[in-house]
Length: 316
Length: 252
Image 1: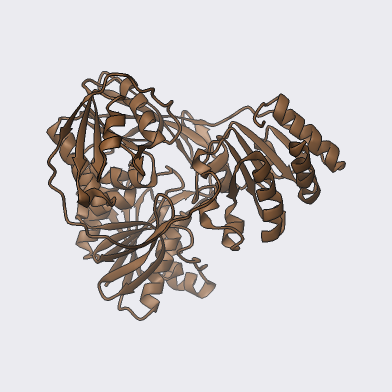
Image 2 (image 1 turned 90 degrees about the vertical axis):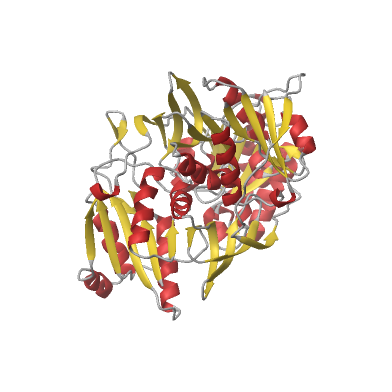
């Protein structure tokens, strides 16, 4: 079977689960597409995913309410072994990429991380993935009876739900003790739409001059466009903006329809987080800034004059 | 306490990636210690400097050039270094087998590893090493304290951050914000030349790559490069908004 581990949050399937279903259907390995739901109070999620796959395995326990890499990897490896899975698909979220290496070690399987395409032909899996800060696309192969694959977010089209619901089965799991205690959480709540899901992102760098400049220019433009807000590492480090807004190598990776970079020079670490955006717009006073090399549109000029003029033009 | 810092030597981010015969060619490129690994070294040194009786051991696995990276880490202040030599291109799952065996041989209590690697863009080495040792892991750690056998700290989770607590032995992977890594000073660079750098052959570890890289291409994405002169700010802004609305059709 092809096993996919369902990603869900707040009682709903995540977009990545629909993407996994597409990947599973087109992978080219034998067997039923099987969804594994791990969590607590997951009935809605299980019913939703039943419209995407051939069968659903459900482990609905209070002890699965809080994610843990050791518990998740033990559960997934147990089901993969018992069901003789030939592929295990895991989302490319922080947690998916955290526990998937443990699953690979448990199954003595190759791990294909954060793939943007994957196909299995005569037992050999061929995948493409981005490397070198997303500057290179590498093709890798794995020749093994079972492979563990994490999927890059938004790289696969979302599958559409069918009308026939697949059968659901409860599974018994032998789970390890939780060893990492989570003693507190600080959720970064924002009234804005999330960076990962936004179609429009307006981002600011050192060129906005100050925290106040960021609010007027970047947030000002984002407000009129209904956009999410992003920032470079440099201004997160200075404390002007929270880490949750950072785009780049050590922050978030985004792929919106349009990315508007205001006062951002375009260091390679930043480009690795936004270079796949469909349309890139740059506004910067330095005509030689590397950001212009990846820009579809741009203005060379003073952000303090141009951005307010853009806000006015959008309002018109 | 014995602390192991996993070190990977990667392409300097400022360098251009070169491809030859379908693979990334680093032979003429400047290589550096992965920044994410430097956070781990720095944190290990701070634990030792805080008065904990700790020894900091750096481990690199790979071609001979890796010794430069280990010398850098010794100059930062690590006590000794181990270089497992191999010309094999090993994926993180294969590498973790070596790292875990070295950790056992060296009676390690705490391992630091970079949260993400700048060459493979991988997150796997720390978690896979933890699994092989049957240790817990804390990933993307941006603040860390140690009290006896207990590690407490903060790490990045799916949306926001979490405070955690875990008992040693454990694997910690790093994240930006954990610390500001120090630069080696000239006296420390001189001192580092006398520190132990042990070279070990790969053969004893019985490792085979799980993946094969069969091609690599530099990403080129055609961009329009319509760059306007902003001397007349309002005219340029109006023209840009018009282009985004009616040509690119990306805003309403």
